[in-house]
Length: 257
Image 1 (tube, one colour):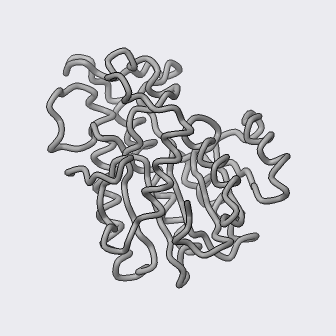
Image 2: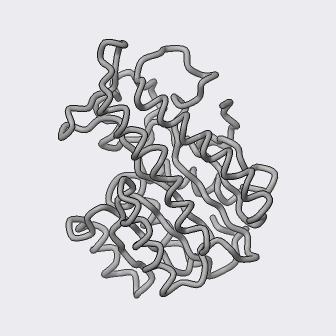
């Protein structure tokens, strides 16, 4: 992994307190070619497992507060990162929301289940947040080295692939995230030619997000977080400039928009 990146490259993992995000942090720290790792989450004080990783990272891990629904928080995290790091080489947006008991939010099975509050929250977390991360961290990608900006999407966000319906908030917010990613890639192809900007589908992964819905997952298609992240890092490592603006699955397959 990271064979195609300059030794000492720096990584930002946004949404790193649990699940896929935390595993990204762990595997990046285990990679000798990675320099500094910045991990962000809403409440670092409660992210005890990130603190444990930091304690053994020999100064290579910085944990910062960042709430993707609060632009001031994103700007503050970007400013704090810029004070210590001259550049970033990999940025991965991992935060996502499908259900949330605190907001009485569940995936909709039918039109009657749609709630404006759930739609707004899904768009804020899944679509708008990653775009604002791009906006505020863009200066750290303004360098000549190869870089990847990746946002974790989901196959259910593919309009062409939608054959089951339902899940209005999650599907639509991920589709919006995909459009933001595509649009950003077009802009950066003109102004940040070193940056490969992509959407990634990790597959169904054994996390809190998918746990209530794992009963219908075919055998062999539910990934542990270690495998899911390892696969995604391999995809990131293989990315070429021609891949910018595309949507890829965990195995490198291109997913239709």
